[in-house]
Image 1 (cartoon, rainbow, N blue to C red):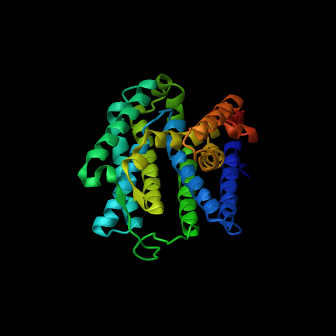
Image 2 (image 1 turned 180 degrees about the horizontal axis):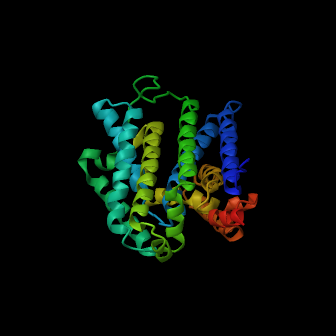
Image 3 (image 1 turned 90 degrees about the horizontal axis):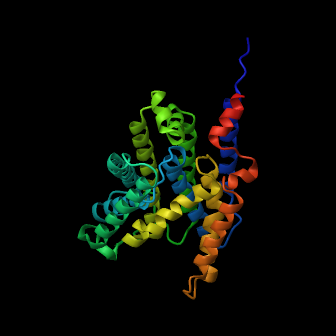
Length: 334
């Protein structure tokens, strides 16, 4: 007797194949591009695709809208930078410490804040992030507002230092985005993934189905915090500098969340599509319109986001016929 795979299994296989194809295409993308600025733009897009995928695990699948993810980004960046500059620990090893500290910070934030709901939780994460920002601006251990500069020592994959060369960082950021996507793909079909979506849809109903709501939220927060912290560590090594404003600012928290929100919150492809649209537009608008300091770039960027939200409230992935995860699974079972 031959057992045919069900529709959900087939869909997940197609997603995996699609992810593998996209990975190959993105690996080949920078080869014909000689312009260093465009290569750097792709690097930032891949970075934010991974960061937004991490945010999407907590804010999209679990429904816990965070406005303080810059906290985990900054912790990861500072941890890796301090371990490398003061103790000589290579960044690849420092990233494990960054991931652990990011997960721990997310758990510490989640322990009191998950007892809140709706906009109260979002406000609490915002306040937490601002408190840590003020602390970092005045804490001598992290060099306060002066920040930490990562000096170039030698061309090295071990230390993730490459003079001028952008291509190595392209593959590092691609690996980061791919791992974040793979984690989202795995947990989406796991027991945790189903628990998160149940909690997002209706907490009372989830509890009636024996879903352990608080542990589910804490698990999502830990995974999300770890992914975001690793992105922070990569960013610090890429630019060679980290300070409170660039690593812990409110604008960074918003920029981490926006690709998932605009691309399609709670979907596998939403953060990638959102980052592919928003990050190049944001960077190019600053380069072309921001030189005068009159805020035209911000007005243009904000107008674009509002237009996208009004045109596609379900996210840009709906342009490609993508369904919401819950709706897709209902249709698949039918």
